[in-house]
Image (cartoon, rainbow, N blue to C red):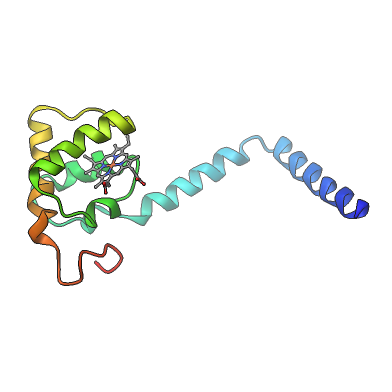
Length: 125
Ligand code: HEC
C-alpha cells in the first residue's frame, strides 16, 4: 500500500516536472481542445434562413445548438428566454433590431409547429 502511494506520488512529481519544463503545454492543449470543439458544429446544423448566422454566432458562445434545435417555442417564449439567458446566465442583453432578427429566426424555424416527425431529437437531425 505504502509502495503504491509512493509510486503514485512519483508519477505526480514526474508529471509536474514535465509541466514545469514546458509551460506552454497547458496552453497548447487548451488551444487544441478549442480547435476540436470549434470543428464540432457548423452553422448549417441550424435551419437555413435569415438570421441564422447571427443566431449561430451569438448563441454558441456558451452552449452548442442542441439546446436550440431540441426546442419548439412560441415567439413570446423565445423572447422571454432571451431575457432569462441575460439575467440568469450572463448573456449580453439582446436589444433592438438585432434582437428582433434573432427572435424572428428562432420563432420561424424552432416554433411549436416546426417539430418534425421524430419529435425534434437533435441527435437525429
Ligand atoms: C452567456 C451564455 C449564454 C449565451 C450567450 C446563450 N445561452 Fe442559452 N443557455 C445558457 C445556459 C447557462 C443555459 C442553461 C443550460 C442548462 O440548463 O443546461 C442555457 C439554456 C438555453 C436553452 C434551454 C432552455 C430550456 O428551458 O430548455 C435554450 C433553448 C437556449 N439556451 C437558447 C439560446 C439562444 C437561442 C441563444 C442566443 C440568443 C443563447 N441560448 C445564448 C447560457 C447562454
